[in-house]
Image (tube, rainbow, N blue to C red):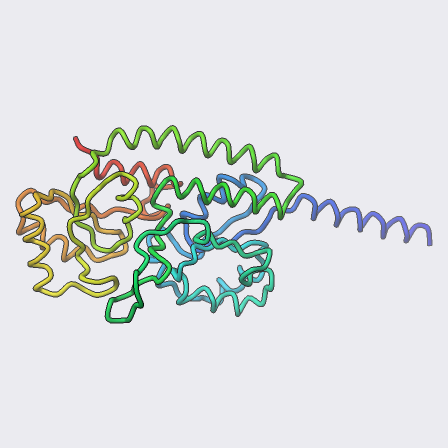
Length: 299
């Protein structure tokens, strides 16, 4: 009996030690959020993203494999603001993981902490395209917003894993110092008032941070393909405003942008990543911001 008791006790101790050293299992909806979790969580977390860096996060297929991943997650980090409304609720419902439901301990909606841009001033309708009633959800393209998310995430991880609070504090401080130093450099390299054309409103926060003027959108309305007459209007605006650069998010077809560039002298098209992993060498948020700054800086 004593021998069996000792064996049972050893098993309990082993299980306890295993759980004490287990990493938090985190799922994110985008690779930009994944990058923040990696920076703050470090080796205390295991993190995966549902969306790849080459995908439009509005339109993701709710695969059964995603449901299985969510079922095993301790924490779900999302954008909110209806960005994932077409697919994330299906995953959460299928996962049957109560921790991930809105308001519960395993749900962390980052958009709740952001002062969003482009909030509709009145009631909206489908005639206006794919408009987000709570504001533009692409806030992670402003480095300052990434810092806000990182700080709130640090506090969330400390609540979920108090034993490693000091590590999360240290990781956040390192992230904060790096980002602030790089932001000084980026702001020096971007000329305020620079004029560009973009396909979708993905880069709104990036433009707002660096004082860039978006003269025209290739989409007449969010999610609405450009008509021939709209393309002519964009060409006219480009010529009148002296625009030299069109930025196209890498998950959109650049055909229209290339057509505009052919008819406007000196207009260059740059297909840019807007998420970590959008290009092979974009492995974290710092790489992403550097790539975007390099695209718009004066040479």
